Length: 304
Figure 1 (spheres, one colour):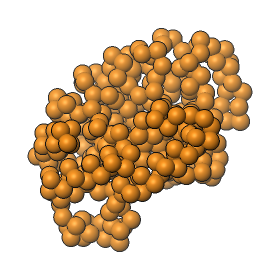
Figure 2 (cartoon, one colour):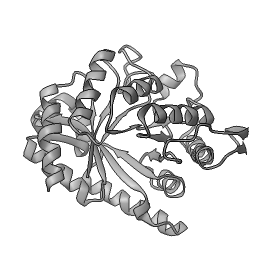
Figure 3 (cartoon, helix red, strand yellow):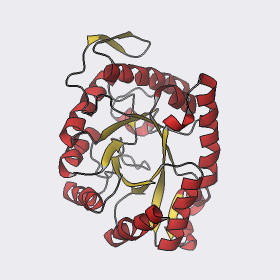
Figure 4 (cartoon, one colour):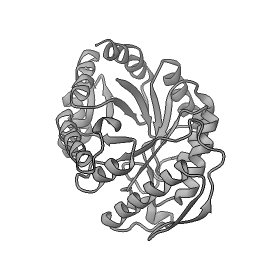
């Protein structure tokens, strides 16, 4: 099972963030990613320091040597798919072929409004996701791409240099059963979900399997990962006080308690279909607990 770290690049200095991903890479993390926001999450009106994703990924690619790298996930409304694909290939070459592109339909309407981006209905955003995924795959698979769609265009566009491995994996994030998981089945090499219980994750894996079967795709060809909140060392009473009324909604996707409990919880996700699990870090990061995950929890899971 692949075990990684997903970093929310907010409320910390660049040096602090670089220390975290260097620490994770040196300890053998299989995956390191950032998110794509312009404001903090959860939203607080743009009052917290926050770094942009593409620029961070360039530093991440140069600073690390082993882990697979990604963004979970880029909102397709912020960047033209051709520009995003070009940035992805550039980061891929900086990393020596370790980068994997992730896209999604977005949710942070407050930052979109603040920076002047349209934020249409969820149905239209999923239409954009579907169209962008097909266009990005064309950039990666074909010598030239021409596309005249509802949301995006390209004319005889090349993608040179090619990705280091020839084709760049495409991840799609989200848990929508009817549209998102259908798009995953049709377009993606990987699927990522966030902050749901092992049981719900397993149920959605079954939905994805059925979408694959409907179009004649082998479900095993889609890699699957889950992001969980990193609450190691905290008990439920402490977390209930921290989250208040929201705790019941997010509790299923929290990695909390002791090292032994964390190992058991990760193995539950594995048994429900996850190929990989990433802890979602938000500042302030307790490096002792991060080291416990990297040096105690991860080896125990891999040995199980």
